[in-house]
Length: 128
Image (cartoon, rainbow, N blue to C red; front, top):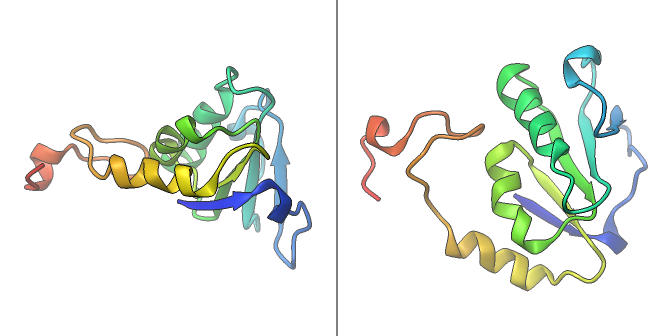
């Protein structure tokens, strides 16, 4: 997962077709034709509806573009975000990029399947 500091995040599309999807919108009702990036918002860290949106977009709808987490994004949410289908996370201003990267170094493999790696470890023939 790519990590971006709040100061480095831009809502400008830079030639990409970007959709900002509020967390109360069902992704199944949005046309994804020609969309390169979808920004999903966490208005506060306790509101997890964007996890469900990312899962639907990535796994059920087969969206192949970038899914970006924005808003109140904390370090301790990042691993679950990645497992739900997010590709990029824009960290809240008070969050440290080095601490965030350490989360991924700490949790490198999971027994269960998820939105990104559907098959569980036992069916992939991988030892954990």
